[in-house]
Image (cartoon, rainbow, N blue to C red; front, side, top):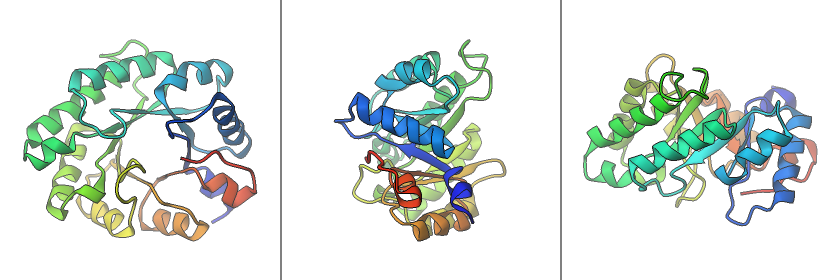
Length: 229
């Protein structure tokens, strides 16, 4: 796999609390230069980036990083993100509901955010807005992961995503292999968190991840200075 092919699968990411405008600009310039799949940036930067980089694929995060904000807030965040120019939404599930075995609430929340990503629910959406559902695997049992694979598939979300990068651990290959066994046709996988080497990236892609969320790929593969989580 060539470096260009790898970068085409990377969501070039900067989500740290102290992300400066200059760092975001560097991130976006790198994404344009090296043709990454997207930039993944804080919601507060979406409007600025969409204005300054009209052809850049913008991903942003919802309910990030803890996921336990109320559903109405996540829906509202998603509406604003799409209106401001986001093309891809990475939402964090409410892990509290998972631990309370309230899977009906988890499913309903994902469904509502998915509806916002559709043309019917949000006039700014054109039916092509991508929804990735972050389940934060480091806090889940295998049984919970399997149930969430089923829920993400049933709601029609585009991706199941391993991690925020802010939890106690990031992506592991075993979870990608587990996802592949339990997601339905049409549901893709994004691995994120702690992916730091070229070998790691290739291993996750070979295991079944269509997208890689990382701050390290551009610097690692090109020598360009990436901003980091």
